[in-house]
Image 1: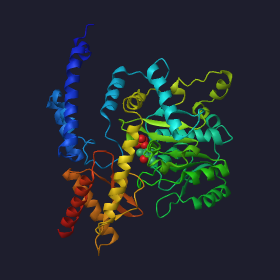
Image 2 (image 1 turned 90 degrees about the vertical axis):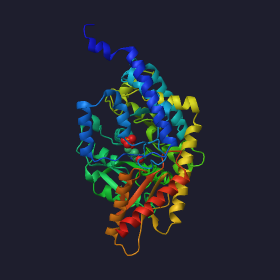
Image 3 (image 1 turned 135 degrees about the vertical axis):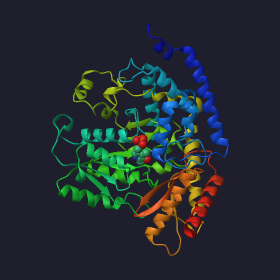
Image 4 (image 1 turned 60 degrees about the vertical axis):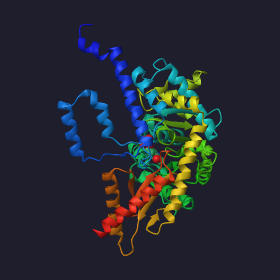
Length: 477
Ligand SMILES: *Cc1c(COP(=O)(O)O)cnc(C)c1O
């Protein structure tokens, strides 16, 4: 090879050296994050952050690059990270990401990823069994809950709508039903599929934020009278903002009555199937036609990997194909190993490696421990908030997602909202804790998702003290 530059790019010795240095850096980061009282985030305004990296591109040293990335990102391994729903990945999960990134098998056809393809089949079979599906179930791994939900609703349309919309297109008025509290990606999926605003029937929730199953019948009848062809119902397990689970048994009974597809969006909490204590939250999940579970939320994995499992596996072969229906009939061997026929992606990462490695190294009890620990903390945190007259819960926590706000006598709704917005902004800028916020029924809440199993009651207590201090400072200013 003539190019010395490219020879340098691929030099194994340089890789070895850089790799060892990087692992040392990340191990140190893990140690610091878990054990020392470090900031979770060094907050910067977007323009300042951009200036920094422009300066770095011009005159920084590339040997400092990863170090600087650490300084300028949010540390999910810090027990005071109690914000969004991504987990603190198990280090071996991150290592399998490196292997995937280096080997770069594209996964679309079997021979471009033999091991990860076979492993993906084993893993999805295992999750299917855990959900309670029988041997006819099949699944895929895909890049996130958003894409998995879209894929599931496409499968539902294929299975339940008489006309082959994939082939012929459609001007029919198709619709799905979903809780008004569902993740926005379900709405987005429906719009991508051409269902329009009328095609997303949002069912109200109860005071406790569960989809109100007593209203399903009326909403369904109303839609049918308007000429809509409802083909699926999506349940949340749980919904993202509040962390409250829909009653899947109720939803399944309704779907059975009307011949609808039941899809369970368990992106966050479908992993409760692994928890002896909390599997009650997903009671009825085995009655679903399809289920989504994110690996990167409650299952200790790196972004981004999601299992989409079909109770009747044949549906997973027909989503993106006009011909698969008869191809499958003609061949008696099921073509499970050519994954791109069944996934939205053409090329995807070798994402099954981290699922397999976690199962193999620690067994499924690691998922039980993780879910159970985090949900227990959610319950305890809820009780701590209830005991505090300055604080108000949005609702009793149904998982590890907890929403609360600071209240003060004499403040209007708008003033209370503003106060809580400012508390959260001050927490962000201080960086000692990282939590997020959400608006529910017009009220501004501080939103915590306890994702790190090393978060303790003491950390949560410390957070509540800090919230009170910030609130008093703002009120007295
Ligand atoms: C997080 C979440 C999603 C989106 O999943 P991604 O993996 O972020 O694409 C969908 N539904 C629910 C209920 C979620 O909590």
